[in-house]
Amino acid sequence: SGIVFVVEGYMDAISLYQAGFKNVVATLGTAMTESHLNLIWRYFNDPVVCFDGDRSGQNAAHKISEKLIAYMKPNYSLSFLILPNGFDPDSFVRKNGRNNFESLLDQKIDIGNFVFENNLQELQSEQPEERAGFEKKIMDLCQLIKDSTDYIFDKLLETANLPDESIPIGLTEDDNVEIKRIGKIPTFDFEPL
Image (cartoon, rainbow, N blue to C red; front, side, top):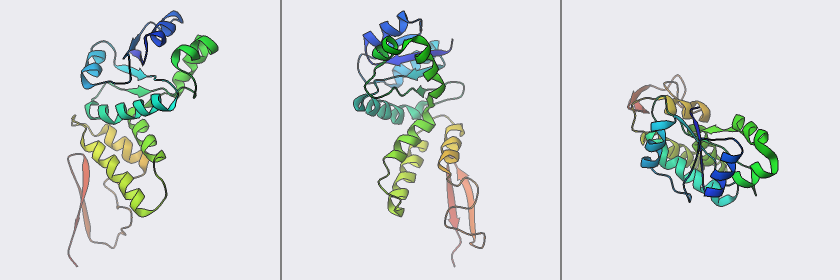
């Protein structure tokens, strides 16, 4: 199987292994680096980060996603599995069993959507300056992606409903604007009035 679970603690790894999930590694904390990811990708192309369902576990997963999105590349993924609050993989599989844990896999979230959704939840209001800050952060994260593919960028734009080689929000067809792509970010050249 291409899937491997990345969990926080050794008890999480042991419980998942005993439940029949043989591909499990523990970070023994909440840190995960590019080196860890590349080592995992040597053996598995679909790691699933499954940290504790509490606030600290989810905050750690969010930080990891924003750090590791820069290293995404074709044919390799990184997904996140959100456990219910109050559960870690160990307690969830012991209380609910293998089948229920396995059914959670249908709810895993790819890194692009995970980054987007976490940042969207941080929006405090629909004010233009809040939206602009959100869009800037998403675009800045996209620029960090080292691989030349535009897949994750396009996925984020699609999910965010941001413009991509189309008329930008707030402009009309009558505005004299040329839209082109340089690298991964669309740029807008405005002709002087």
